[in-house]
Image (cartoon, rainbow, N blue to C red; front, side, top):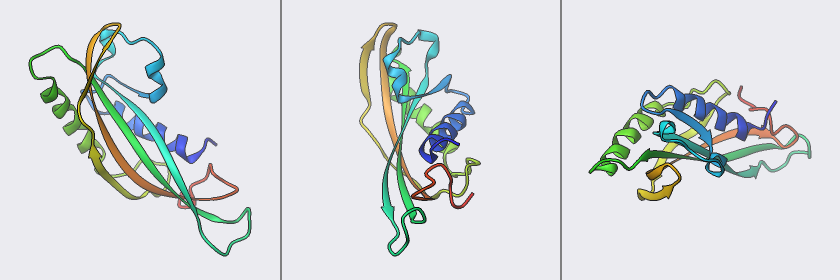
Length: 153
């Protein structure tokens, strides 16, 4: 089974594909390959984590709290007079889709939207794009010897 971080990233991408306005959801590394104009709007997902061990347990049996930071970068072509308005409309749909963390990978606690970044623009091979970063946080519990198993599956 993949790492719980991978499970969460894949679950977020799956949820994003259910957002009608989003044409594709990819790992952040998708930035390393060329885009075509028909790929937009899209979302890129990255999951970082910090791990806290519970005291008093033996190695191999130590419960861990994995506090995950989930970044969802919504990207659209900058092709009208109000690109920020386009991003705002997209992020409304994304935020509505992520009200509950019922991803089918076990219990996820303390799920919350912690904020969004400043809209950013860039030139890429198929034109000008604009993007908005949404950041969520959540906790998943594992054992130190089983980073691929949510303890509350």
